[in-house]
Image (cartoon, rainbow, N blue to C red; front, side):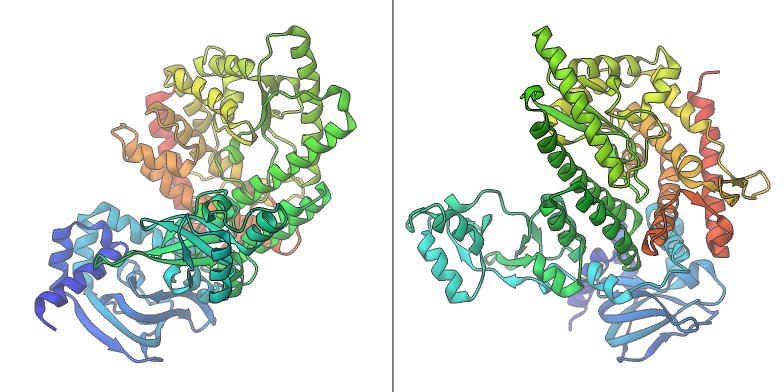
Length: 634
């Protein structure tokens, strides 16, 4: 192979391999000349556990490598094509805590340790990637990982899992669609025009819409499509497909692959059944059960069962941000079905009180940020359309308060703990027409009554999860109109500054005792809360209201010209660790049938995890001091 083609191949490899994709073209080009290619046979040990001289980082071009603590017989990771391993020894030094072994014939390109250190010193984002990689290893150091499951979820491209799709045009007749399914022994076709997937038609669609409704066999295929196709690139991960199926509540994803030579796009199909075939039970299957649930007790059972299975996803390498997304999506689906059942029940039992005006159920706080944990709390409100007729407005207030009361009861039946803020829809103050909500948010945002605003700041993390979303848009528009506001910013930052982060000046944990006389501290209240409070404040200061996610808020501030960008970067790193340890604590309890808790006993952590938690809490303390000096009114 010519030198130019080799350099092109290696350049493409580095460009698609994290974190080398964070480097500039010049850095990647200069790196190529220092690479050494080495081939390993299946079963060959690449790195021995206990090794104390670390010469190279390994970039996998093809093949598969297993990282395993052979002394403890504990899987750590699987490294496939376009991934790297070996950074731990170079960065941390000391003995290597795992073995790296080729599980199939493998080609690696070795990056000399001195070249890696040079890149680490020169590129902050590059260094941050490896820093988080090591922290992730420490957080899971005592967890039995499912390395093969992790590899399937995150290192297997959809193009390798999807089946070839049967393609029809929008003008294909239903009779021709049925014949195409029969000829290909398929239960699905994809409607495509001009290389764009427009929709998916299943056997069920034909039975329901054609046979049952008597639709003509000459009807065009496009008339059977009731929603746009959800399309993912063939290079996306299986986990991306799982998330898409959950989010859109669908059972089929269209997978596309566009060849580089300019030929036509290739279409594949991946179904929920395919996912189950590859992985066993997944959250996608739980979503389907939720949609079919006919009672609140059935939803409560499904929530408990799904919570017990979440640790399996963690063991398969799902990181805290994605895992919070999975928990939040399951929570949203449970609450939507719960509210649907409650609305049907209350309408049936109180026909004389029913009001036909639009309404919406608002989630605040963790649910509003899509950061729900297993120990879920009620933090909600009900918003409904205004009425200019006094008698109608009075009747609406009674009807929606009745609806809110039953909805809150149903939340409790499903295991959502009582709110610790007092902001719940069953209270008249938080079951109001949209104009009243706008007045409240305007008052809170002005910050004139600091104690009241301080109690209400978590409502600025607001989403309508059921009902008329435009009512939520109106509430968020009010927030936008009144922010940024220096008084509000000071109040919000104060909320984070006032938290007593449980680490002393001598770098020791400051422990409390809970109702069971156990030592520890409340991870949510004393670790996570200040990060969330600061993220909310700093995001509003720069006008970022696109998302309430703490991760996205901090990223927005970090990438802005805000004078708090450095603090946002520190907080983002801290939040990853705190959210990970907090959620893992709850998943471990749920798996064995215990009640999830926010109580953290650091003495039960591995020594390396204790040190990581201490460093993380100290970092939060430093940000507290920095932001207090700039934002908090004395």
